Image (cartoon, rainbow, N blue to C red):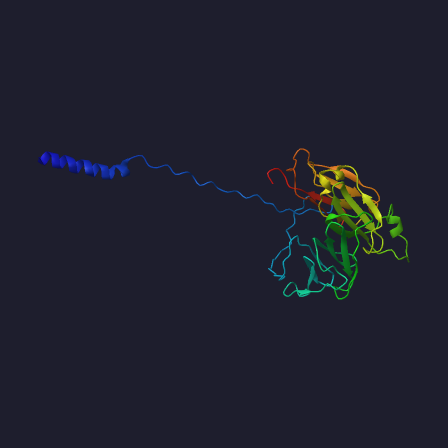
Length: 299
């Protein structure tokens, strides 16, 4: 009997120690996360240069209004303009306070808002799509103190959607020859207005600072695919205009004559882009080198 009791104690003691002497549980090694440097600086030729980035400091600013599909611009006086649906909001104290400044010349409603500040003339644009029928554009040349507007300002062809507006220098060819006439009523910069409809992309050029858009029409080629959806209009200091269509191959539609004629440049065929893709964007530096950024595979 005593031997059985000793045997039971030994078995219980062995079971208690089995976790200590048994095979240790394997622990997966912690994978070291290596972060790649996604910051780069380029020179006037677009090639990388070994200089430090400019220091950035970001501060939160609450405009106090709903602002889906927002757009923002800053005049040379330092006033910030933010398009909050049909409202044009302004801050002249670095975003600390905001006020609504659009006048009765601007649309009281919107189906699709857009805003732009001309970096050359400081003209502030409030662009509001009115259904699919037209767009109501208003503008100010004194930081939003006074306004002018046109309630039917969408070019020669009605029905517009996904509206975009931008400005840029006049060239010496095409519509730009008109912009070279000194002492005329032609505005200092070319104003562009583009939109899509099922037939493709339509782009117009204004000679009077965005008051009317009488020149232009449909862009043909890849612009006619995918219903004409496209990204923002951008311009370079030499007057080149860029529009980016939503097509399977990364593409930029370009005009060298202020919108009279357009041609296409495709790129990134070896990389590709998800389709249907989001809008891509083009920006140009002070030497008119253009940079095209788009969403890559898995984006």
